[in-house]
Length: 405
Image 1 (spheres, rainbow, N blue to C red):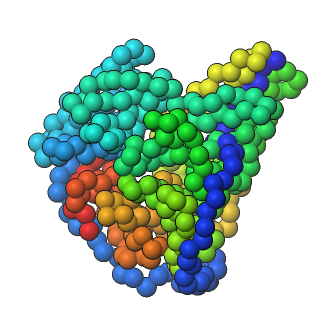
Image 2: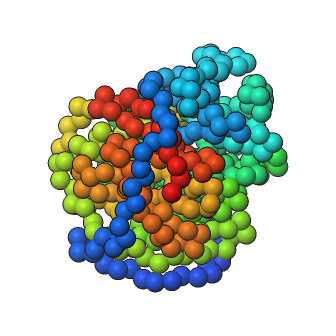
């Protein structure tokens, strides 16, 4: 029997207990009628430094103690150490499957002791780099087993806290070939104890499912509905998890003990999805290299699982999709948290408007709105710095550094 599934849905685990501590405020309007918050945007200002060579896709950066940054480019298949002030870069490692090699280096995260975690998407593994950026131990990012009564998780981190614990979302209970539906869990992996636990539950985007073939040879694909509402989340260095809730648009902060602090609802003006917003959605898919694809193949009870990023098509027939009437308040993407514990939430605006981030404190209160220059997005933070990627009309990406507001 051969069954192949490709999906971006979630793997279900029991939810850890959470105690609600506080909830202030209330929802201030509904779709199409509510008013955008009254705070005036603060311009990010001029870039302190920028790198003139392009990347294919940049999802994270890792600032080193000497001010240089590590950049992983999954589609470009390169890991570099970059000196933005001097405008020079050194390539680390090479493409391959052996030691000091990688395929689709997708992200870099800080680990305790000055170490770095490299997500080697193409080889299905996580690689530890020493403080001197020497390649060290590797481990598969697939944890567990597939089958009835057993759980399989992909520990591809969306965040790493100051203790080196990995945070990622579940990808669906696959036992019996059934993909989970409208929600997933935020999972946490302690690399020392090998314990995986759940720290919160999130709403997923709406999906469409297509099955081709029949009998013992079937292909099932699960795809998100464009611009459908979904929660977004991130993690602070101290292990607090922030979840941005769709619907009334508020933040939940979950501390390491499971207590929850909820902020007030934020008023916003929902953006109607017209052709310009649909075209913008196609364009912004290139920011993440077309998104993360998970493929699971089962042949005679033997499982092969792969993950990859692929180039997003720019010539989609937009009419083939089922579009919601309104865009959600914010992007359902990872929420970056700066060194001061502030969560940066990227807003959905009218097509063509300059990007804006709502910046929230640890109580879930919005403290300011930061406006970026056009075609920019935040990819990371350093010591008083914020790192931003500019994407041009060809989908090429350029790294810039700004002073942190």
